[in-house]
Image (tube, rainbow, N blue to C red; front, side):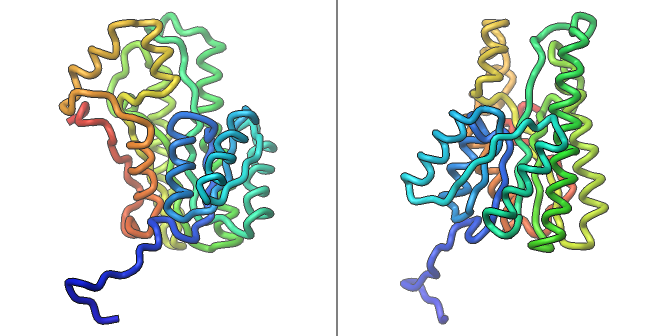
Length: 263
């Protein structure tokens, strides 16, 4: 079609016709991403442990005209993740893109005060859980769509020492390494693997930190050049781009979405 100043191509959506899988999708960044991905044309399968939250998000997406379904899954359990990824393929026929967003945090405090139970939980969910999910997603993409993209949710706390949230930052740094390795191993077959590193974002996780340290939010805002915290939908926008074909030559990247706090 010849284009001029009065002629524009029809917008198809950033993720048109993609089949997407999102973990931790019942609230926060995951829920915001589910809404956005659906608006951008994807069919979305949501996963988390809390069915009531998943059902609510799916109903909202469908009411807005989007396509979505959910599967209840414990993302620290390998068999549960296998079943969740299998559910995507059974429901939609293939897997194109995946956003490994699910995570948890320890109560803030010095490393020497971290409870071993909390440390194990962080390691199991934030590190092992992402590896388990990536493993199943890569297999599913290979077997169905053949090419695709995976995105892991890291943190700016992974990019340097992370006082009061040290175990959390360490697990997120491990995600960065998994991301880079998978990008190298899967690149030749057309599977891209990236991560995002959000800064201060107004989720339930950050609210729990604020409850424990009432002044921390103002401290973080003061360190951020944009002078504010992000809303979950702003992180979702970056996630959508990295998973879209517009980022077709981007892989192995840990992209900061942090308002400049690590500039």
